[in-house]
Image 1 (cartoon, each protein chain N blue to C red):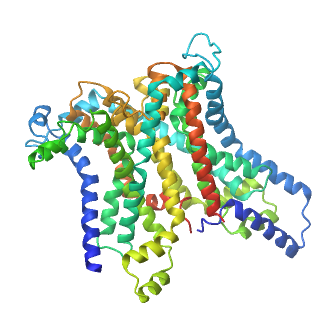
Image 2: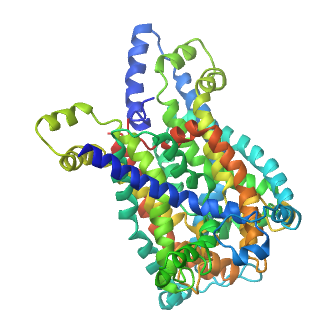
Length: 321
Length: 273
């Protein structure tokens, strides 16, 4: 199937074909047919529209309204104007959450670059690749909750990693990975931002590189271009779209999908050191019950996500030509 | 030169393979150790393999309840999900109507927002509708949250099937509903295979919504139950490991059986060409 032909483009093509089909069949389209199609279409998208309106769109809009109240989940609701937002910009936890979210983003370049190199190396084919593929893809299957628990167990101060380090004589490397603020954040970034991206990224890039014209490589080889030159001048430009796509996907995973992993990996701790903006909404809204205040935070997160969403959609549409 | 590249690739792959498999292997062996053995023996194989941890995890951890809940929740939600993705995907991919593009873009736009951003308000709305702590609440919320992506996948698929097939049926006077159920859906069966797997994975691993909506123990899902175990103090690591193993079995089995589908489905909607 050709996924390039997505809706926007096909729509025009469909209209063209429709015209031609009509001509060739000498069919005079009744106006009611088009109206009928439109009615059917609205009926068919109704389930999706109702659900997304009720459970995504409406909650999102409500956040904006509740951000101006002091609601705590029960009792009376008071209008407090911009108080929540004023408290927020003076709240150390807010800036810490923003900082943590940004620091996690710094891991993305490596999380994209390593799979890129691996895929480029694997392009020529390798014995046993299918076996490796299954293994490096496995973490992706288990889901963030389980992985968080697994790596939490793995990185405990008396866990297997430190035990192994001590056994091979690297006592000084056996750090308390999860209980020192900065180190916990770096552990989170390394595992969530890099390690867990490798399996999917490699397979994704490999699939993309499969679509690059082999003749380009042949021509370059004849000209005497080395491996690195071919990688830089042929592979990279050919799969530029896929690289950008994975970068945007990684940003989404970091900013908007990390809750489940953090919940079991570090519980946002120690202290606030692994709280991202998203995670803080949980702590504020559900642990502390300050829903009005949390809504003010979610307004900020909304705008961040909206920017990313626009980037993603533009990328998808750009890809459609 | 080429030989060196191969060797490096091989070494790097082995390192990553060990890196991704070893932590899981550790959990696997730990789940068979007695609690007292784990204190002294962290990394070696258990001297005596015991099943006690599994018994405790199932008995005190109520894991059977959770599996039963998943067995009810996921198939039910899946039906909703498939229906919504199929109908909306067909309309967006194949039919012409006003506001088609803006509505489609809105759907794509809504796909990205984190669950936690919505959860505070979803909880409030579900409370009003008496949907908290009910299966129906989770089913509706899951469908609403996961269907936009499924719709996107289905619409790209439907827009790629040959135009003549559908138009000739329309000329013959078939209604839209008939075209959808008798022509388009059978053609989309392989794609629905991906859709089911993607949907299954997202629902099985879903935490934020179930965490907030399913308050009572009897209603929890496997993922939620195991995640809650993580927060409780006093659960020994071997027991926790056993729970992790039990919770992983079904996703892993599905992965092994449908590997090809998963690899392909993962790229649906994201690969150029």
